[in-house]
Length: 149
Image (cartoon, rainbow, N blue to C red):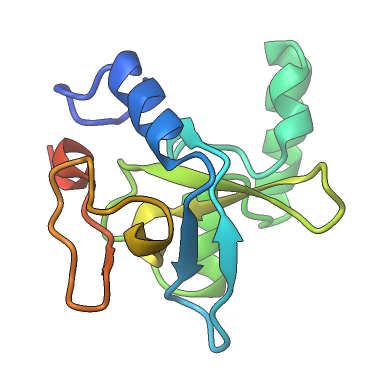
């Protein structure tokens, strides 16, 4: 895993991803916040997660060429770059993103953890990850993933 805290293992990401699958989360960074169903957690940090999932399937040389052209044209290429350009710089770009699926049923959407509020009351009786629920039943804390490392 790139740029995740040292104590977060791939197994931790898999465990958190399965725990969050189907959970409802709400964005916290938009003028009109949106609710989504979580479909997992990225294995990369927001600072490294590409916005264009189709590029991840390309061999490294063509992928780097496309990314270089996009950066030269000042297009954001990672979730962190996009968030910084459209909203505000992320405070925790080393954390992974929640994954949702767009209305077309196929396109993955990536949301930085710090821009999301998970509604545990709609998915779990309480947070299974060690975060405490707020009076409204929601939490954005993810145990070790929420710590800066």
